Image 1 (cartoon, helix red, strand yellow):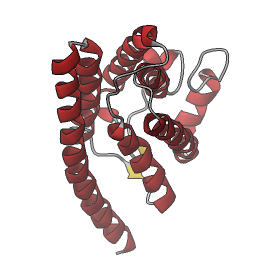
Image 2 (tube, helix red, strand yellow):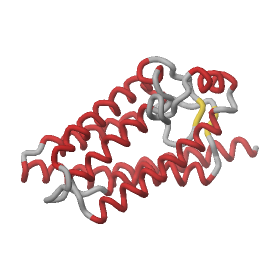
Image 3 (cartoon, rainbow, N blue to C red):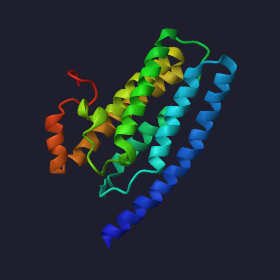
Image 4 (cartoon, rainbow, N blue to C red):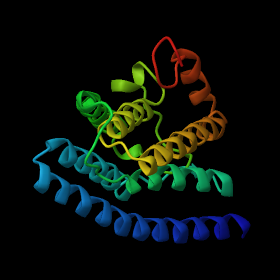
Length: 206
């Protein structure tokens, strides 16, 4: 009975998160499409496309074998995902040439999503373990993409609010990653994968 209640609660929460994500994404997309129309900067459309792809993979993900019901896992997962959708285009950037970093981050994010396919999860959940594609090099290529993408974004759209959101987002994503691995490591197969692929985000560094 307790297990059934947990699964029901998880479905309700997932639906609520999906609705909230759709609304927040709509606002995010509108602001970045308008920014593209005003500046002809394709980076805004690319950023919008990458976040749209993430939302699509979330909506069409496979059903997990197990999913964390720890409230903190949900908190950091939701916060790490949604704070990035609060980034706003700005008229000034401290390092405009960082657009190349933004594009590299988007490319890495897309490659990570394609490698993960429908095993994408917002909250720590046990699905088929991915070891091919980008997952041969680091355990969390999506986070590597986020790091490059968000860093490039705030360097080209520099405002105090964007910097604060960047620090918050990266902090949330780090805690989310650590807690996610703690849940996944309960599976011996994932423990073996962790021993085979030593680095989480950056090869030979972290």
